[in-house]
Amino acid sequence: MSTTQMLKGIIDGCLLAIIKDKEVYGYEMAEKLESYGFHSFSEGTIYPLLMRMQKEELITATLKKSTAGPRRKYYSLTPKGDLELKKFIERWQNLQSNVNGVIQQYTITNGGNQDET
Image (tube, rainbow, N blue to C red; front, side, top):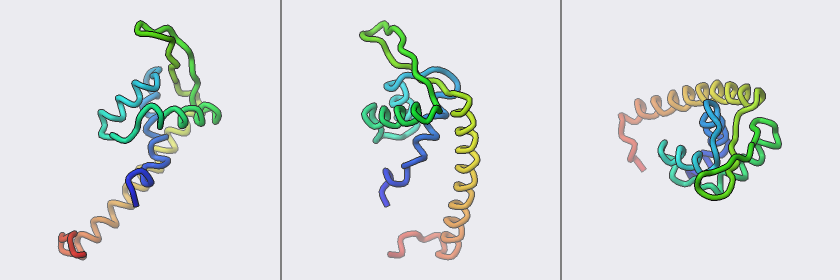
């Protein structure tokens, strides 16, 4: 399974978390994801997700002047988006715990040697 397949759905929650504290524009989100180690997400990948989240009323968008070129679209969380972020965090923590349990058991069962292929 590729990293991209594993990240489907997870990136939505990450974007909601990035938007939570302040209005953010698309390029800034791509930079933030990059700073957290998500190297495969460009603006071109993020914008369709943002448009979908906007249609789902999880975020709103506002055009604002930019000091460097055309106006930028800034995104902020709606109350519905905030609730979705809380649900995502709860689901993520549960999933993380379950996966860690499986991996720990695998490591114990295989004596820590993960290269037994």
